[in-house]
Image (cartoon, rainbow, N blue to C red; front, side, top):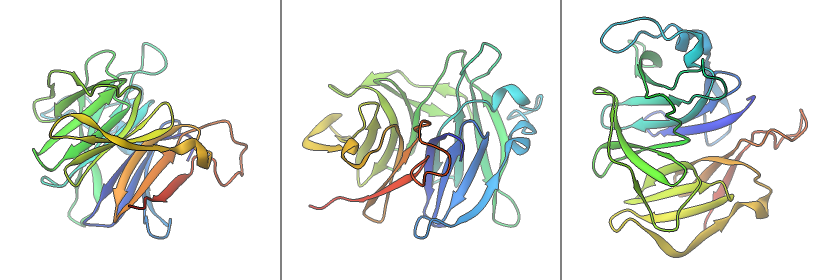
Length: 241
């Protein structure tokens, strides 16, 4: 990993997918062991056709992988790329679907609006929608129609960097290096449920997944020296009742 950003969990495969921004790749990991299952590199994303027909994605749509989401209902894996860091970089949503051998492959892409920069994404099994977030604003996103819903906020929640729906609630990481819990029905933060990630030296929490009662938090901090085992590590937390 060169720059850990988004993540998504696929229960069917027991696979944790990690998005590498600077490496322009995604990795499939066994979350139980940390073993690498496979890597899908930039060539596969750059060769993706636009959904419904059109040019291939090319090099300027793969330079800022930000977040991932897995839609369990349609067995679709999404990768969202942003506009960093020049005007030539194009925000994009990629969709991965299973091929005949049962493995995910990059199937297509959709161009996103100029300036779209979704640092967090997640699928809500309750309403069947994919949600994306930037800063304090969340909105739904539909890949087939390539449309976003009206933006909304959760009171007192800002700096969203990662998100995952689990058990009817939404869990988010923030730029303040906190793990927060949102009661999705009321769209409010759960009182007293704030987990300080800095106590464990997490310096840039970029994604979170709830897997079998544990939270997997990706650290995108770039300042650790090469060879440090915590460089772009995934931290696994067990939260006691």
